[in-house]
Structure formats: structure tokens, C-alpha cells
Image (cartoon, rainbow, N blue to C red; front, side, top):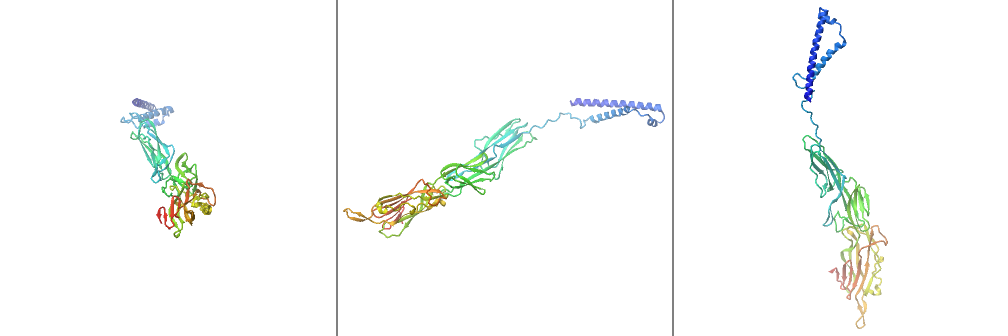
Length: 482
């Protein structure tokens, strides 16, 4: 095509030159005739000549100008095309379409609770909510290799496929995988996922794609250490135990809720108070529709355990029965949780058993577990689940009694006897006080017993512990001589 255009331009240049030459010849002939007609000085006669009409005056000049202009624009003196001429080759093709990629999360926040030691040697694994990462790539006209990088505490869940590393020209693919949290963000939105594309053709550029998210770690930690479980991450707690609810980082702010118990705030800190009854449920850390459950088990008091037993000695002279006792500290069980938010009382009880020697009328009103004898008082449970100091005593002399001998004669001495009464314990919230009869009974009670043999040896048992004193003032505690 360009050759045809170039040939036409050359022909037009030749015709222009020919017309110019013809016009010049005509003009010279006209001037010569005019001079011949007027004679004398050609210049004077030329200046005195009558002006020609306007069309005749302008047309030859216009034609000459057109010829020169056209010829100068189309051809140089050496035959090389001017810059204004199209090149001899075809025009350049447009640049190829570059590859493109996009990346996004279906939710920009992940909440996880790290693994913890629930009790000595018992570990619970990390658990986390998940977010779906979606990558869509188009190869454009060139195709491209792909590279995925993640900066921050996200980890792909087990069983998820790998992202393709190449997308072919004019092809599109979509890939997704679920990710979970493994470490907390240092600030909101600092998890950065980047997908870069490298086109297969040099000189073609493409933009990377990024997406941001936040990984929030939550923790639940009881405020008081349990006597036999010092694990700060334990998820087994006692009734009314206080639990600290923590998160890292502090933003976005997690909302906590639970089906039982209640929450309260102190400044920016969040605390949970467990219910007054046994239950198994979860503390829920929530950010919008994202919920991470933290399992919790609530246990009630089961019983009273005595520790640190020691004897009580009255210094009585030999020959006297009685006057013996033991003392100990009482602890609320189980000891792998804390019960510092409850109070305990020995519940008054008027029932007892009197057999043998103690069936005599003189003992009918002795040693009942009444308020007058110290029962019915509420005491708050202290650190270590220590409830109170307690005693089990026989602070009386057991006198000899007249017996009937083999021959019917009266004999002064002792004979076997058994005396016992239940010691029920009740528990309630720590605000319980006074003489209230509202209590929740322990799963197990205890019993106090007093035994007398025919030699005047008195033995007292309580909380699976025992102490005895013979009339020769030999005292044995738990089988050890004192």
C-alpha cells in the first residue's frame, strides 16, 4: 500500500514541475510581447503597465506555491522519505495484556486459644477459628508464575491444597484454602498476604495483590491458684471462682458471653464469675460472626479434708479415762480448683447414737452437734481452700461405773461404749453469714465417734483420723505414740 502511495506522490511531483515550467514560459512570452508593444525602457514600461486582473495575478503564484509545497513535502533531494512519510514496514502491534491477580479473606479476623496445661501433665491442644483465603488469577496474553507470601501468625489448616504456581495465557483459575491462627498479631491488621505475578514475556509488568487480617489470641486464667493445680491455664474451676478473660492485641475489642455465670469489668479488664452450681459450657470470645469457644467445667465442693493433725493433751494423771483430743485444719475438696468465693458451716445436727456405756442417762444430752457446741457458724474459705481449724475432743472424765460381778456383786469400772453423731457441712456464697439455714450440702459428710473399752482407753475418730489415750496417759495419734 505504501508503495502505491509513494508512486502517486512522485507522479504528482512531476506534473507539478511540468505545470510550473509551462506557466513560466507563458509568463515570459507575455512580458516580451508587452515590452515590444510599449518599447523603450523595459523596467519603466513594466512599472507603467496596466495591472492584470486579480485572477490572472494570483493563479500562477498559487499553482507555483502548491507545486513547491507538495514536492518538498513528499520527496527529499536524495530520495529518502522525510520524517512525515509513513515507514516502509507495517505499524507496531499493541502491547500484550498483562496477567492479573486478586486475593481476599472471607473474614479479616481469626480468634484462637493456644494450647494449655489443664492440670499437671494434662495438655489441651490449640484451637482456632478459620478464615478462607481466596486467590483469583488471570494469565493475560503472556501467562505468569505466581508466588504467595504470608507475613504474620496464620497457618494453613491440615488437608488444604497448595496454590498453583503458574497460570497459562488467556486462562483464569480460582483457588482457596482455610487458615487458622497460631500467634497473635502485634497490632490490628498486621497480617499481610501478598500474591505476586511474574509474566512470561520480558517487559510486561503486572501489579501484586494484597489482603490484610488480624489474629487475636484469647486466654482464660483463674485468678487464684488451686492448692493442687498451679496451672494458670486450667479450665476446671470451682463455683463462684473468678476468671480473667484476656486478649492480644487489645484491638479489635473482643466481646465475651456465656450461657451461665456473669461478666463484669474493672477498667479495661474483663472478668467472669462462674455459676453457683456444676456445669460444663464455654466462654465465648466474639468478634461479629466470628466466635471462639473456650471450654469451662464448673465443679461444686465435694467434701472436707483434714490436714496437719496434732494431739491435744490435757496433762491428766494416770488412772483417769478421757481428756484426749486432736486438732487439724480443714480444707474444701476437690483441691484442684479454688473455692475462695464460698463460705462453709458445720450444720447443726441433734441426732446421735448411744450404745453400751454411753447409753446411760448421764450421757443422753452430751456431745450433740448443736449451735451451743459450736455448730452453725459460717466461715469463708481462705487461700488453699482452707476452711477452718477444727478439733475433735473428749474434754471430760469418763468415770467408772458400777457393774454387776459374776457373783452378783457390784463392781466399779468401765465397760465398752460407743457414741457417735453426724457432722454435716453446708456451703453457700461467701456473703452468707449469721444464722441462716440456707446451705447446699456437701456430697459427703463426716462423723465423729467416741469409743470406750473395758480398760478405760478412749478413742476419738473424725475425718478418717484417730487419737487414743489410755489410763496410763499413753497417747497415740494415728498409731504413733505421742
